[in-house]
Length: 106
Image 1 (tube, rainbow, N blue to C red):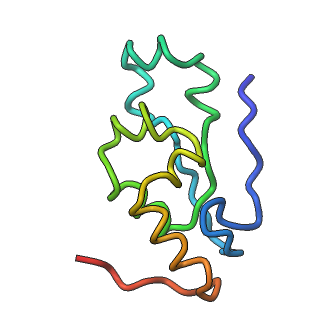
Image 2 (cartoon, rainbow, N blue to C red):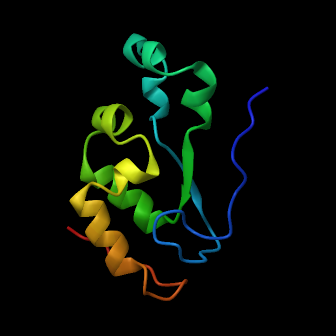
C-alpha cells in the first residue's frame, strides 16, 4: 500500500497558509511509465514524491522548465529551489497575504 505524505497547512514552497493546496508530483505522472524513470526510481517513490503547493507556486514550477527536466533533475524541493525562476518567485510571494493571487503573467 502506498502512503502519501499528509497535506500540510501551508505551501511547501512559499510557506503561506493557503487554504487550497495542490499536489505537485516531483516526478510528473506521465513519466512514471517511461523505462528511464522506472529504472531510476522505485515504483512507490514515483507515486509518493510530491509537494503540496499553492496554485501560484505550482504554475511557476511548470513554467520554469519542461516536465522531463523536472522529473530528471528537479525532483526534490531543494532542487526546485535551485531554479532561479522558482527561487525569485517564491521569495516575492512569501510575504504576500495568504489569500493573495498574482495576476496572470503573459
